[in-house]
Every structure is written in C-alpha cells, then in structure tokens.
Length: 170
Image (cartoon, rainbow, N blue to C red; front, side, top):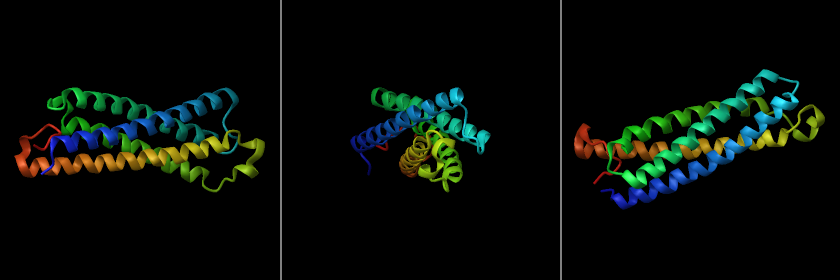
C-alpha cells in the first residue's frame, strides 16, 4: 500500500508547488488591483476586469494561506486529526473552485485581445495575460492536489472504513 514516506514527500512537493504558484499569482493580481485602483480600469468592460482580477486575488490569498498552514502543519503534526483528510480536502476544493472561476472568466474576457493592438487603451495588458497563465497553472496544480487527496480518501476508506481521519494510509 501507500507508505507514510511517499505520502509525506508527495504532499510536500504538491503543496510547495501550489504555494509557489499562489504567491506569484498573489503578487501579480495584487499589483494589478493596486495599479487599476489608482489609474482606472480599462475602458472596455471596466467592472468585468475589476471583478475578475479581484476573484483571482481572493483565490490566491486563500490558496497561499492554506498551503502554508497545511504544509507546515502536516510536516509537524501529520498524525493529528487537525491535519487529516477533511481539513485538506475542503480548503483545496474551495481554492480549486475559486481559481477555476477566476481563470476561466479572465480568460473569456481577454481571449480575443491582442496586447500589441490594444496600445494605450489597455494598460498592463501583458500583465493581465500573465495573470491568466499563472492562474491556470495554479488551477491545474490544485486539481492534481485534489486528486491526490481524494485518492488517499479512497485508500483510507477501503482500508480502514469511515473512521480513518489522518492523511497517512498506514
């Protein structure tokens, strides 16, 4: 079956990647919100850009916070129920949903925009496109992490019944 060492290594790698992508997304989306609050949003779809960039900011704050908490907590207290299956599953699922909403809606809004032709009418166009890319990367990493946790849930359920609550399957 799955050993505790494999779970710990996989958990560390996945959550470190999620943390790294979330911090990058947090920096980009925070900088965009600050810039657009000061300079004004693009003239086309002003409210749409504001809302979509802010949902990406919320998703990155959520994922960054829980990636830090779950990574450090699991490394120190892996056998504790506070860092078991359900406390991992819920924040990762919420983060995945938030990033899916933010990345998909921002992609739909910027899909047909060419930053070279936008010129002065759309400041920070390339940065917004970069936010779309890192948001999708974070969404994919969170999906992989979610699949990992759900797989551990099924392993724990099949092996221990409904009472197994920690992330370790042994």
